[in-house]
Image (cartoon, rainbow, N blue to C red; front, side, top):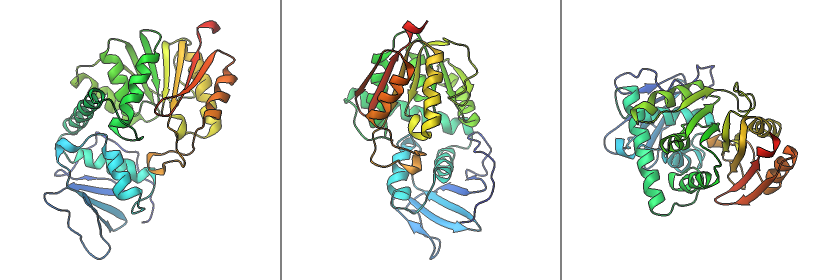
Length: 303
């Protein structure tokens, strides 16, 4: 499929008759099995893909109550893992299109997505969590471990993505700021949070250059972000986290044999990488494993 320069994804942009479309994809919800639309179509259990005039048309059969963050794993298993579709750009656009196809109004569709995800995350905690990066059951124990490591009552999360962890922290009564480099994602979180009865702050920023004061929060979180960044960028993020944290920095990474391209991973991270980042701070730190790797840096002695 030919590539064009397209506008960034707008998760709250208009749809036409329930169909999401942009310069790369057209996404529709359908009733019944997705039908092939010609010899060039690909059909999987939940999807039918057809290239048309330089765009990928995606039909899906997911009902609204099944659209949650486990969609990431489903897309990886059926479309991106087998190689039918490649690249994080298309992954994000198809993901957005499926969510937007669940309701006519943008915020209604995203509120449904958030509520479905948070409900399933709560259920995963009750059942003891699970494993597997990219699934709700997989990150539920990661988020719970974050909670066990916090030192104070104010938190800044860098690279928050949809902000599920920040929402959980804010709902627990902590003063929470969620930051991400994507303006659309940050705007989405800011719009949806009040609908969920949660109050938090948001900041658009590269995690290596955050326009906030020193010691902004007691705890600064870098959870499943560094695998998305090249090594130099990641090192600058860790240093920036130390600047921003009054008491503690918490870093979490998945352990992978190969980077998961569809999720935007560009590198694997090892225990040795975590130790090197910890030593570079010149501060007391701990590295351990729990559903992936963890680096915990105590910054209180720096102040």
